[in-house]
Length: 393
Ligand SMILES: *Cc1c(COP(=O)(O)O)cnc(C)c1O
Image (cartoon, rainbow, N blue to C red):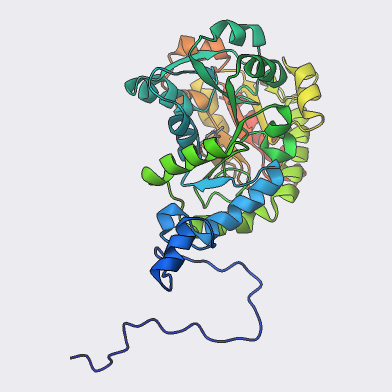
């Protein structure tokens, strides 16, 4: 016998005539309903209410409504990672015998999903150059059901011909899914350009602090939404309430962070271009960018928070550059409040052969920068020093 029989009964939440200002964090896995009739009414959608956290929880819904607002969407879903969102969108909708066509510079794991995993389930895949709408049109098959694009590619920041490909997709009755992670809804609104499905890695600048791994997927078609939702719930792509809570906190400052990061990126790109030892700078709205005209027509002045550049030399110079900038995290991520440096040849694109990388313009001297919200003068001096250190080798 227990000395304290009520110990395992939950203590009621203290009463208060005031309310918390901050969204509560609700980690409960289960939700109790008063009786079976009420539970029935919840399942039938006649009454609001949660049942089991894998199927949905309030912290995910609060975050989803925030991103819906940014994207002009309704009923978007939060999943456990950006890759969960990509996977649920594709596998929730496609069936054996379907074909999916993707941009040839998609995020690495999206490429892997296309080239290795979907094929095992009888879904055919192929890739085409998204800066060339005619190449996309030529790659369409009778069984093509979905096209997956990113607006600005990683790491060479090529700008896809979204409007050209959207027109083709519309004509042929093919679904268009756009991964809007790089551009963000501040830079580009896929639903206004014919997208049927919008995907985000919330892990990146939407959340913004590199402390939550999450994804988002939205569609305006209720049948597609249900297919994606059911696949995600069945396969357990559920997000953690704590991550959702952190990301919600991050998103309040998203627009401020984005604008500052973007202004910094534009200024840093121009600064890098003046440094001895820098061979090439890539920033979508710079006039020397290969897709400059399309970038301006699709994105306006919104060049984004990513800059890529190439230095003279090879691996030795690349090593010296990251060592010469100890305060710039050399880390394969993006969208953090602090500037991060990535070296595709040793990370995201290491699986390619040197020739395969060269075809994309990625040498050992190639770096991608996710520009943060620091003081721009600090960033300029850090990059000046790092590039000089690389060229002293
Ligand atoms: C990071 C990223 C993903 C994957 O997101 P995770 O949250 O890391 O799973 C997908 N697409 C793009 C464009 C990304 O940058």
